[in-house]
Length: 65
Image 1 (cartoon, one colour):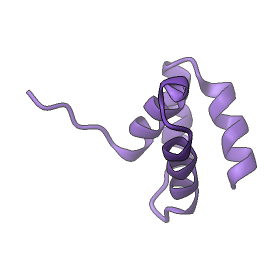
Image 2: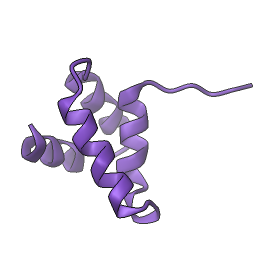
Image 3: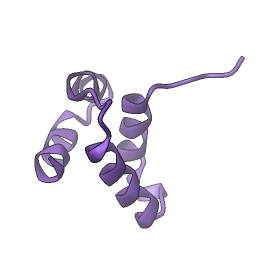
């Protein structure tokens, strides 16, 4: 079985595990998501709520968008 995630779920995983990630990759992922035309902020917040990182995601998106 191969698990496949969409862009928003992947970004939530990156944010949730930011302490284990390279800072450059973390920063680039956030910036790339912010400028992506296909981003879905509502879906991102929905995933963030389920992963208990909603506040952090909202704060990051407020800064980036």
